[in-house]
Amino acid sequence: MTQTIASQAIGVTLPQAGVAKAPAISTSNLTKRYGALMALDALTLELECGDIFGFIGPNGAGKSTTMKILAGLLEPTSGKASVLGKPVERNGDFVRRNVGYMPDFIGVYEDLTVTEYLEFFASAYGIPRKKRRRIVGDVLELTDLKYKQDAFVDSLSRGMTQRLSLARVLVHDPPILLLDEPASGLDPRARIEIRELLKELRRLGKTILVSSHILSELGEFCNKLGIIERGKLLVAGTVEDLMMRARAHPVIAVQVVGDPEAAVRALKADPRVDQIERNGMELMVTLQDQTMHHGFLVEKLVAEGIRVHSMAPHQLKLEDVFLRLTKGIVQ
Ligand SMILES: Nc1ncnc2c1ncn2[C@@H]1O[C@H](COP(=O)(O)OP(=O)(O)O)[C@@H](O)[C@H]1O
Ligand SMILES: [Mg+2]
Image 1 (tube, rainbow, N blue to C red):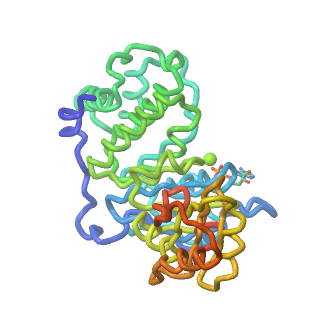
Image 2: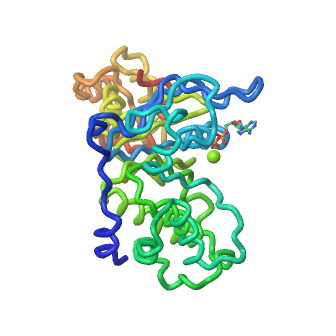
């Protein structure tokens, strides 16, 4: 992508003086009920300026509800939501200026070309006519859609539509972006393109709350992650913090010569062992705490006449970490 020129023009809009210290986004006990249904249950989270927060959860978890409230499009039943220190419900204009909200689906704009579509939104945001053309050119370049500038919006593939939708939220250059499942329904190639684009936005210094129902889609470029299920935030934190919390119970991968079940029986009885998962011929042995050296496993097995083929600390992947954290293995 050719971001250099675009980056200069789109740049980073720093929060205005006086609000620089406030979190970019903060919610406190944010709750939304639809009749008896609790769509969002006391959600509390905070994003510092520059954070890329991956908001992960299955369909119906409450991700879109959260984003709509933060964008000022939906009123919460109770709780607070602020953008750059200002309550969303009383600062509509401020929120619209500082937040770019990309919904999960854009409406239908059959008769507009890509350029017309973006110019329409630029004018809706009050960008003067003279500046509009340049800004639209810049966002088209950033999102790699220049070659489609005269195409009709409804002729675009889903991947291009998603990039156009991102281009739209960038025209007024907001410092905060709420991106609702930008990669959903995309083929692998389009998904990679979106990911690259998000990385570029991170480099530009944007604060981003981005949702997905797939952890691996977001894991590698977010600095913070949260898992939401049935309206409740199960875990959240910086990626390092989550990794550390999961490592409080180290996992050792063990392979023995012969039947692994004999090894399972021998190790299960030891109070220093928290749990054992069998993965084919490999055993994943979770220890009680971090300070413990795994050498005792060898002694135990040898004492039972079991020969050890290999033993090594297992590097937890982000997926493992989340499984463990959300299963309640780690508090
Ligand atoms: N307008 C609405 N009326 C009634 N229920 C709704 C409405 N919008 C969302 N919900 C429900 O709220 C829950 C959370 O939805 P949503 O925030 O869209 O989840 P997600 O974006 O994580 O898939 C779901 O159970 C959904 O069916
Ligand atoms: Mg949704």
